Length: 279
Image (tube, rainbow, N blue to C red; front, side):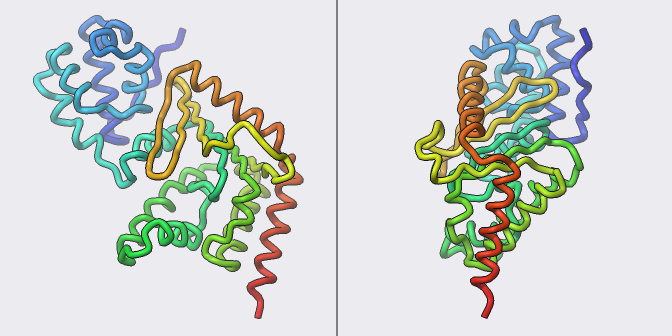
């Protein structure tokens, strides 16, 4: 069986912590399960920390230093590894997203962040924070567009989005912004960079009426599911729970329009917005 994938400690503080955790655990002669037991976490959770797909929290860092006799190393470095430009409820999911090999997302209301244009993102954040200064909005937009750099790679991650028809019909930022945003999604689909489907209103009830869903798969770590609400977000790694969410996503895809019909609808709605914007 091949060994674990080597980590690049220079890639991020979290990768550095993961690489050192793996080194110190193996040096101590402990399995992932044996290290996880006194922390009341699974061996797979330790593996996720080592792989960099999960963030080390301070209470875990304290216990790691005690168990592995690392003289406060993990506590000292944990604070740097947990700093993020994203809101607390989304930070860990954004960091996991950056190293995922496959991302599947159901969006019930808004175009997913990875697919947003600058104008659309600005309109979204302005609605969230109507009294914020332009500098604050600029920082939020820049962070969101930086996430989209993941798609600069021609193949990885595989991104598959199911958009509720409400995403197309909700006028975020006005007709011009919507036309540009939907054309951007269509362009990515035309270039075979993403797979996109639309779940039409005509489909009626469906398996994810309670909210959004993001599934992330990794090369050397278990899959994760991220569920987001108003100012909240939950990253789940329990295999049974993730499997249940994967079934939900499969059901959504089965109820949605085909990629070809979805693309045609997206382009048609974009044209409607474009014509509406004409004098």
